[in-house]
Image (cartoon, rainbow, N blue to C red; front, side, top):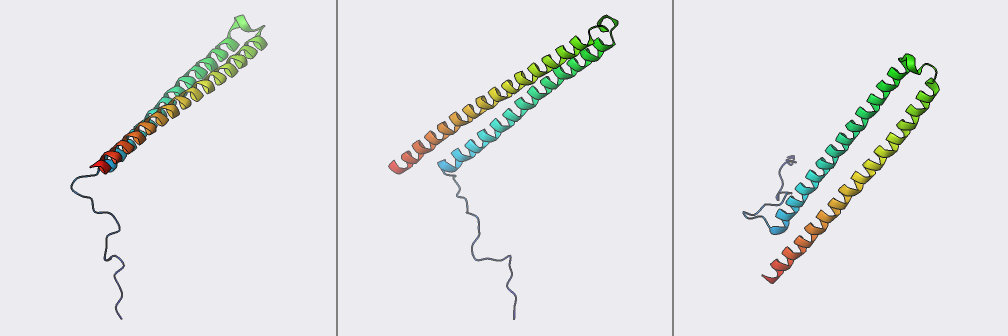
Length: 131
């Protein structure tokens, strides 16, 4: 009894591309490229914003330690501490608002881009049907 070779089949499981790619394939590749670029752009913008926030928070922490060690603020350390936490809370709220705004902007751009790609695909399909 002979064993069948599992790597040998009668038909390939992938499509055989033609010499000229179809309009739908080309537009979908461009669309995928645009989506990837938009995702990378959004990720980089989030990272930049997070690093700016982290820099501001670390500078604030440094100022707090300097204020606590300063002889001028020995009598009002409670006020310094309360002001630090108030500013910290406001910074976190502002950073959250900026991140939410960035997210909504990137989603709006993606939706607009997908709508334009869809419109272009429908127009190309209509043009092929007419031909």
